[in-house]
Image (cartoon, rainbow, N blue to C red; front, side, top):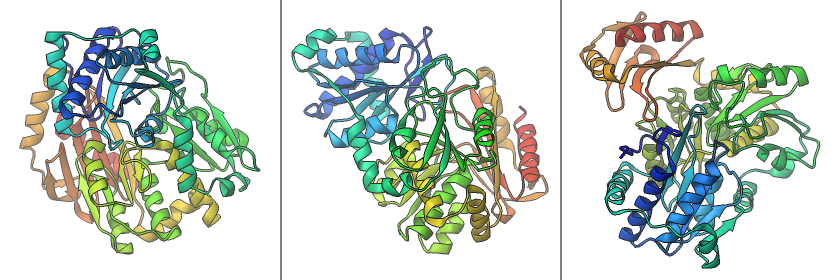
Length: 473
């Protein structure tokens, strides 16, 4: 049996190698056993999927396993964004969701995300229980009820998850104002499950949306992977320049991450984007509440907390850590470097669609272009620039790299004094002036990620080069 282990957000594997129908069925059986052990079967389980190869067939496999265990499967009738499926947990009072998606991973991958009843990422404690139940299922077997029989018995319900989600968005964002603003928006759906959402929400007014990569293509052509970061957004940049759009919005493969480009077709980093959205909530909408950030998120968030008198909480990487703090503190917003942001009134989880709509609302309410908004942010907190390098590594070298980093005690990096080393999630070097750099292993892929934030793009590049040498990569 393949060892099924849940990483930062779910289990992911290469299709046809470890990601097979049998292993997906084991995941579903493990979830069914977990729900029964917790006495949480009455509301059934949402089952969603993205646009990857055979995702709908894998989702049907999950549904028939749930039905075989007497648990109602609310099976989405179309490929749907992860935040849309997650919101339906609350709207339909379901016990959680199983979502077939590998999010931003390359085309060869697929995955299995589990969302508990609160519609956020599963905690480490929950995923440990799921792994135990999956191991039990591998020994004792899987129960199935064929799809058509499950439908006849009322154990499989086909649902359109779009309506409840859009109704909630309309409570959080002024749709009529956005539709009538006369904006010209370029959007990149990255061949993913978020295709059509921006055009649908913003239609029937003077605002226009030109969407690229809005069809389904499981190979994600034209990009390394469906992740809305600078090197994948060249087509969106060209679209902005060609059409003279006011802004560019991008979603990842399952639309829980958000990427932003300005009116010149230049990328705005994920750290700058979340800081802008926090500034929007605090300054434009006059809302107050704690902010939650991962250790890879910008120091600008802390400076905004000081400027507006709100507390800032810091967590390890992943919404399985951010989400619980977000809920506990009734936070205004939570964000991580990957482009995943959550907001009060929605789900305690990443949502790329609402992130894009909120940024548009910031443009409309301030009358400023994206580059002008970024300049205003820098006026408030000072200039901050950021980059991330991902380096593939031989898994056999992981221990040696970890030991090398653990032994590193530099006094300075790229001429900046090291004030503190934080090892709660990787090795983070906190530098003079509020700058930082970090080395950590990906929770879902054989990658070492290196991050840096500093006062200029050149300073960021220098830091990344130094820290790569420090790790011996």
